[in-house]
Image (tube, rainbow, N blue to C red):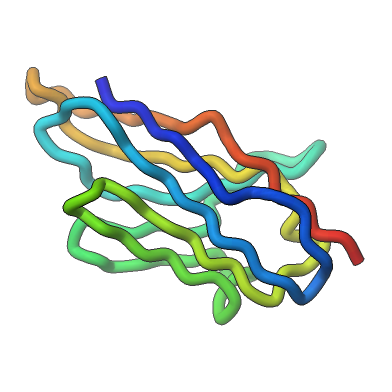
Length: 120
């Protein structure tokens, strides 16, 4: 069973920066793509950024040039560096991982979420 724990959320003024981290623990055959999603009040959860095990990245258009996702496979950790934050970035940010468990079954797991608040 793989578990994800996020950290690094908080409150910041517009234009500021935050760095989110997501650490996975537990045993799995392998962990594949990981990513960050966010959900603002009254809105659907959306993909913010994702990264494959090989390091290929994908970003939603609204964060391109401001956010950077990175990964440490040895530590099974991903980070999201968020710069030039805007009030519309305010949301609960969730970490997600895809993988294969010890019984060779695909799994998807989510973290509990970390709140990011950006004030104008």
